[in-house]
Image (cartoon, rainbow, N blue to C red; front, side):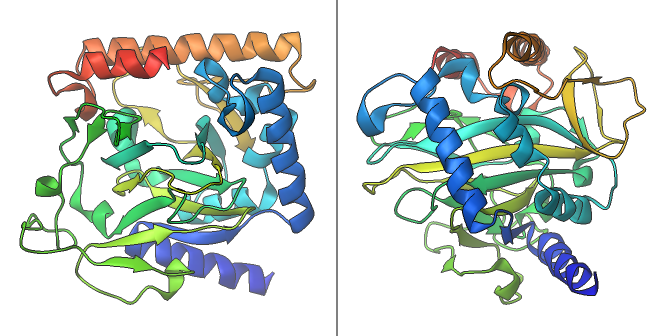
Length: 337
């Protein structure tokens, strides 16, 4: 117990200081093999395309933990839940959303610099965290997540729309420009064209030297490891230039006291630890049968509610990512994919 407490103290220290922590060892070697196999079975059953290009598309990317017991086991994994509870300082824990984040070999898909808070009207922000669980290795070559250390201290930043290109196939179509990213933690000074942000490759964020400068850190993971990053931590990822796919499950966790700031629908969530006594969210049923009719029915209700929320919040201009001209075309592209 004392060793576990010490490990969690290290996790919390890195998370508070840098806005993220990695690696968090979640799976045993056998579990890593098992969950990768279950993911491959899911792609084979519900995906489209041939060979390494075969992938799951549309709504089946999202909320897999509602239809697949193996994904439900991941979001409820005791080691992952304990780490998340430690950084959020809570006992009751909810999953707001999850999605498969895959990049086929030699693909151009990427994410520009962004904050997760720009896509969800939830708070308080220090009670939310995103876990990125590696089902494959995640490296610089295959497009690992990149974090800006200390960026979580700069508040909510402006997000702008950017068109996709053949070389830069932006998934979200929204970015925080370099001119809006502070160069010093908690300040408004930004990186000039004459300067270059330091890029750091390090095996463990807990070994990252202290600095007042905002630095770009490569979050490279082995299968079965996870990273945790804050709701306001600026992060991105580059295209996969390798011959191997990058596969992960992104999970947005929140403490039981989190609420929608301006609710437009009653969001659905999954309870993964503790109890939930609030009435501002509707709790989803955990899956019993793998890809069963009842499970897909539950998934359909959740996805309908999610798209309804996205549409209404966009129409009302509630989120930073909705306030820039040209976003509607980008959202249409994302939905179509």
